[in-house]
Structures are given as structure tokens and as C-alpha cells.
Length: 197
Image (cartoon, rainbow, N blue to C red; front, side):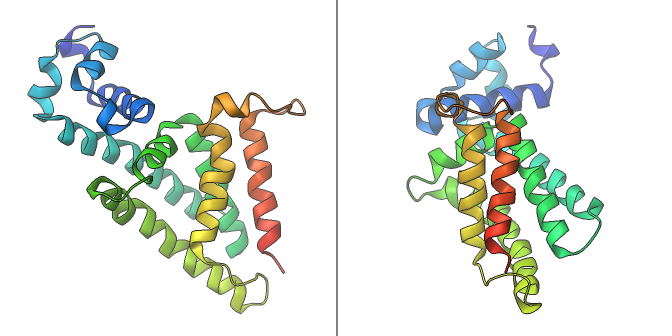
């Protein structure tokens, strides 16, 4: 692949996958360029460093996810519960398409650091704030138990999301013929039924 034919989204998608596979420390710019089939200089010319490449890849991946979740929230019909279900289901669908997003979080969340701070402050915290408003409204109306948004995050993001981000493990379980994505959607419904009064 010639350097001039590598689009920005393609380069950042490959970088996301590399960082998801090996973590920040285990990924080299050379490895990203090898996956792309381009000169080692391409990434340095565009980004200057591995750190800047990581931040660009994160912005690319999580901005897309945030946009999809916002669109799902706007398109949802019905009440707050329907809106919450639409957001969570779209989260599972998008992360099934791009499991690198959850896998990068798994790498970065194992220990404190500036990269985790960045992802948390720019993407996880705003999502928590939206979820908190919805959960409080449902609880105030007597429709749901009071649930901290962090509980919902771990149950969906690393419970249902684990089915798509850990394909080797998910493949070891006997499924009923449904896809992993369908199983993850079922898990979202189980979580929501557990919240409802």
C-alpha cells in the first residue's frame, strides 16, 4: 500500500487495533506501519510520535462511538427507559463492530495514568453524567432502583461488552445458535430488568 493511499481513518483504525492487541507499551510505530504496509516514516510525518498517534487513534475511535450513542439517544422513541435501552444496545453494536475500543480501555484501566485520565474525562465521565440523569429520573418516578452509573458501566461495558471484546473466551462457551452480538443484547436486557422495580 503506497503511503499516499493510506487514508487518515484507515491509519487510525489500524493503530487502534494495534494498541488494543498489545497495549501502549507493547505497540511500536514500526508495527503499525508494518500492518499498513507503509514506510516507517509515514506515522512520524503525520503524527511525530507514538504518543500523538495514540491520542489521535483514541479520538477517532471514541468520537465515533460517542456520535453513535448520541444519535441512538435522539432517535429513541418512548420514555427514559427506552432511551437508555437504545443507548446501551447501540453501545453493544458499535463495540461489536470495533472491539478494540473496550480492549484499549482494559489495557489502560489496569493502572492509573495520563492515558486513562484522558479517556475517562473525555468519554467515560460524560457518558456517566448522561446515564446518571436517566437513572435518577427513573428512580424518582419509582420505576427503577437507585443505581450508580458506575455499576451500569461495569455491567454493560465489561459484562455485555466482554462478550465482544474477548472473542477467544466467548467462543469457548456453548451458545444457543445466536450470535455473540445477540447474546450481548440479551445481557443488556437482563441488566435493565435487574434495575427496574
